[in-house]
Length: 178
Image (tube, rainbow, N blue to C red; front, side, top):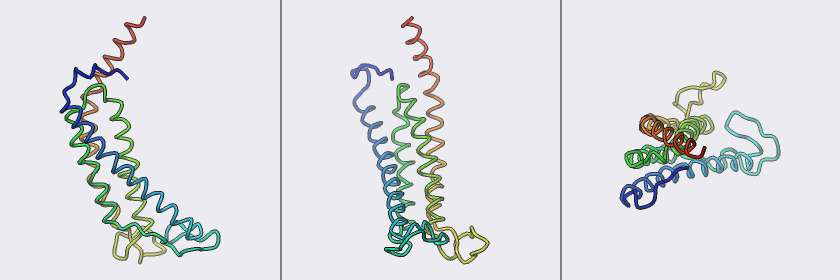
């Protein structure tokens, strides 16, 4: 990655980017921890991952061994757009590759995972997802995916602004090597 000399970037710009990225990454690591907790819960429940799946071995603790409340997932998912809104305005062209990572993490961790959690921890009265069990509805975890529209828009627009400058700088550096 091509980085300018540290004196080329003001301390406030760099600090705001780092703080925004730290907020985003803290949320990402928290979602990963919740996924590991859900996985451990399924292992303790005899390989049962969700209320509709069967056990595969002896049950130590019935499903859900450690339920993940929907409010926890939604609050954690709200941190992603906050982090994106803090870091995006101060991003430099050198940070363009980071935006691809952040966009991918948003889709996987903050869109797919909340929807998956809503199936793993269904609630009565939620939107039905299984015709064989109409009494079970999606949990409210899926609401964590809604604010990611903001996250994807902010990161996508800023990446679209930074990528051409980054690509031009890369081409120049490759041409200078020849």
